[in-house]
Length: 380
Image (cartoon, rainbow, N blue to C red; front, side, top):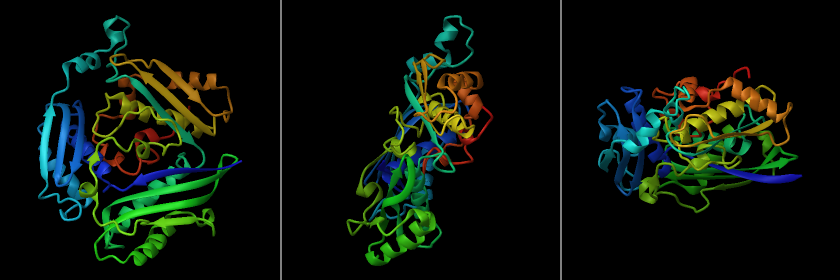
């Protein structure tokens, strides 16, 4: 049976991703000085203005306005006429301390209070979190999001390296993969929309993107005479970033995870310290799912973890191998429970999350990057 599946990625200059990057830059700035900081901050970006809001409790002294402006500069925004200028934009700070009601459940778990001797913090929120892995790419990620991220990253590389001098930071990529009997066999469609300077010739842009972006990333054996290309299909993309559209932290959760190929619990990642299980438990679920596949126990694996606020142990653990398991799923669950500590403290300690590593997660997916701790492979 043949089917098509599509995933998208965006560049670091996309207004939502700009907000994610600012929020994670704030988190890392606190973790550089205080590894026990409680951070839950969000960024809103709109026409010449940045708002940083949320709750932060920390002993560290951080110049938040400087962090915000440096993050915008790093992305490459410096023109208020067509996107945003890191030097002249308004930066508004609206930060308070973490709610004492939330802290009450995080500082000491429900199990500790009930005398169960579970020495762990409670989960920072309720919710369900998913992790996923598949053997269809070397990074054990689904092919559509795997290629979309690589293309989006390449779009940024040709800009920052001066290969295409007319490219601006904002951009989006979409890849449609054709599957036959659940295996990727060809690329059906590639969509690339990139911001550019006003004087850019559209035909030159299309030629350059096809040669220097798509041609450098997509394996030629996946392309054929029927592959469709839509490069800047509207014809013009000069106004971009927060001037073209507002941005908000946490609005690209499908880009951040598996491109829609796997289920999503709904929680966003950026700007949250690892006591927030909607971030850290998703990382742990990926760690577990990846190692189920890497150890040969399944070709495809999805893990669901669920938590109650203030409770350390997960409420439930679900393993779904979609009929690809090489051993019974009950045995896989037993291996997981024996190998992994799925309490908030266990997750933080296993993945060593109280350190400033979160800026590197923001762009081009939180999964599939070999240098991140939840991407490491172990014997399961």
